[in-house]
Amino acid sequence: MELPDLRDRVTSLLPGVLDDLARLVAIPSVSSLPDRAGDVQATAEAVAQLARDLGCPDVRIVAEGGKPAVIAKFPAPEGAPTVCLYAHHDVQPTGEVDLWTSDPFTVTERDGRLYGRGVVDDKAGIAVHLAALRAFDGRPPVGVTLFVEGEEEIGSPSLATLMEKHADDLAADVYVICDSANWQVGTPAFTTALRGLSDVVVTVDTLDHALHSGQYGGVAPDALTTLVQLLATLHDADGNVAVAGLDTEPPFALEYPEERLRAETGVLEGVTFTGTGPLADRLWGRPSITVLAIDCTRVADASNTLAPTARAKVSMRLAPSQDAAAALEALKQHLHDHAPFGARVTFGAQEAAGGSLVPLTGDVAEVARTAYSQAWGTDAVEVGQGGSIPLVGLFQQAFPGAEVLVTGVVDPDSRMHGIDESFDLGDFTNACVAEATLLARLAGLGS
Image (cartoon, rainbow, N blue to C red; front, side):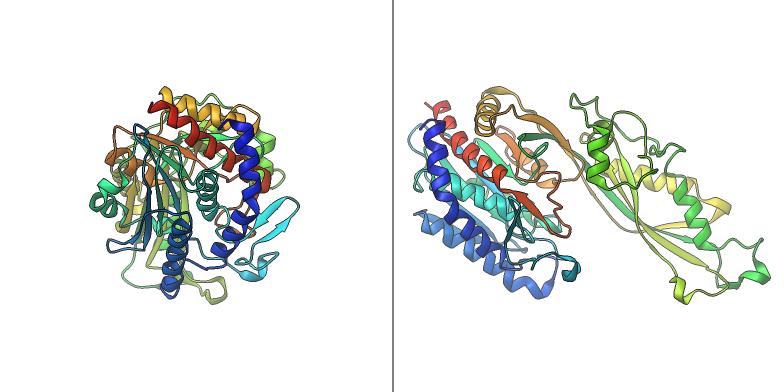
């Protein structure tokens, strides 16, 4: 089938696909909340049933000590490659429900966008895959393995084990990961760089007991002020990361307009951006450090006391090629070496996950570029992502001979993880057409 036939076919299927998406969104599959474990299981069962409804002959719900995932295998016609379509069915908590414009677990359409928790991250990914498979009545022109994970929002802790245990089932020539973002509404993108992540809880101790601030202030260092001074050393005066030994990537070709970034971020009038250099490089190819939280006395409970101990959680986003464990050690060394007044610095919970470079080269890349550019009616671009998707690296490591394509339905207004999460219905339609077209065109590579 050529593109016009697929667009007509996909468009005719969209009402049913969106109905199924609404039913998935209605299940509050929040993987981080223990009391939602039944909902995570229910969403896996719902996805499995959708695959069975397509006539898939091999559908399983699997778990290797973690949350349930769905593996559904559509056999490959003779000589055709196999494509693994990835998405995840778990979602983030809603936050304060009263802040939502509409019920987060009821899909609502407003001004050409669809709203709901998980509607774009990443139940839209499931829906895109369903639309592409339905375009061929469940008999795609290539082999397809539908792989829908259930714990991406908590870092995919059992994914590596699951991929090892089910390597034969998940082996494919091409992996399409529908869990990323487009450049803007109306412009498709392939993600070719993903930053890594390292974080640590740091504790500063200066006294063996609390002291009266009037009696000893000006001599005895309190831990909270000392911690604040220590955290301030993590950046230079321009806001660039000051930790030694961290990598940066070569400059990106795409320019990020400052006016657009100000609108997307909501930076207040008069507030400047941090760091120096091109904005795309700062967002996608350089490290950043954020103090996520500080344990200290609430203002309402404050007394005139010098605190003996204080702690903070510090998070770093890393250049895609940076070794995450080495970056974590560099951060800890910096904090140790820059402690004011000889304060004791110790470290608690910590984690590290590498980023990924996803080259878009070769025959598969050209087929994908053509499919997505034609579906949208404009050229697809290559972008980075400041966030981390560790599973991309897991796929690259587990199946080094395969091609990985990272796409999605997220746009700059999607607010994934936030209040009023949404996607653009036009982009969703184009994503469904593009993926169906990609499957059709990939069939030609196997002949």
